[in-house]
Image 1 (cartoon, rainbow, N blue to C red):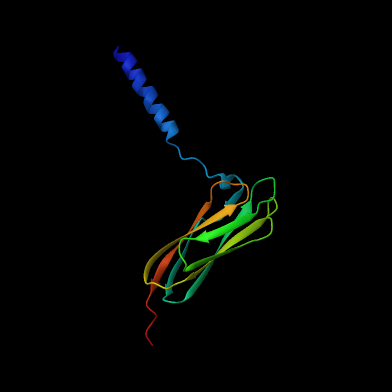
Image 2 (image 1 turned 90 degrees about the horizontal axis):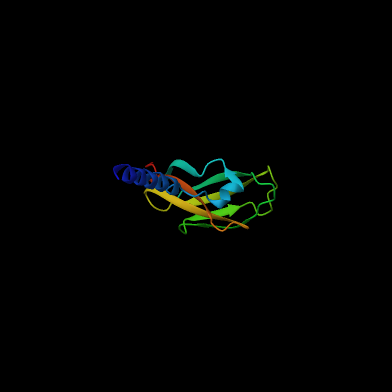
Length: 133
């Protein structure tokens, strides 16, 4: 009986570990971003920052970005609007208006045609007071 309970416990632990693995985002099977998080470093208050999230089409068919949206109105995404052919590169540009002081963490969600879940990108950095003159 002791061996049976021990075997049952071991089976339960192994199956739990297998189910606990995170599922891959479906967008990751179509595109590969060079960086999913970009730290713009330090900038001054009210000084705009622009960063490019570059990606490569790793699928065997063209991919198209349908939309991109940001976590707040201070960040405006722009993106490659034409289909990106297999092996070619595209980009999502995040324009951030540094309108508040302190550590900043912004999110951009990118919707690819034919993919149910959005790809999440992150923009981080610190905004400080302008230098005194």
